[in-house]
Length: 309
Image (cartoon, rainbow, N blue to C red; front, side, top):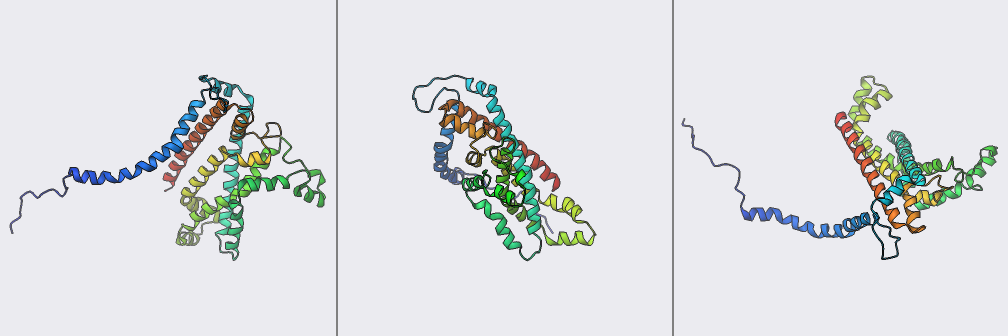
């Protein structure tokens, strides 16, 4: 038998100018969307950063550049430093408490109890209510003559009655309570989706091996839940840092500045004091904080997710 040793033509087809044009053609369809994105997002953002270096009051078309003075004033402002601390505290508290409760709820409704479908709907329901509506509802409940104090008085706990939102030592934690109450069900749904993607055979094999529930969760369920954990933690920390609606509706940043966050100070300085340049400098700082926090968290969680897999 004779073996044909002649060189065969390469399987790679030569790229012609016409084929290159055909491949590049779909990129032209991106141009309208990119132009719209630049017009709506990029250009206003760049112009906003420019205003952060001016003394613009938001109305007068005549303003001047002040360099880094707004940022220097921001660094020396004790109210702003306090607002940064409140923002970090709220974001961390929400991230830990909301996701902890959400995970416990997900584990509960993932069991085979008969009412699991009803409980899922009930626990998720607060997340679909507008945050500002939820905040006003809780403001009425937590007022001095609201339902919470009335209930405490009815059960003989009058000594526990408080001005929950007027007490500077409690107001910040009441805001955390409201947000966790509303969005723990949202975290639950994401965790539940992760739990339901785990094959039932894994649970059965672990049960046959005699693995306890705690060990089963830590060694089997937790690594497989890594994507859901990453998503929930990212959403919680970013949402907590940018928080505005609930804080402003519940306390307006008060009493005093006890619950002010960066977002509420941005609003007050821009629309109450007319210091738009200063408020935009705050917004730039907030953007940097969100970018750094989310980037660092994503890198750490992605590394843990890869290690778990």
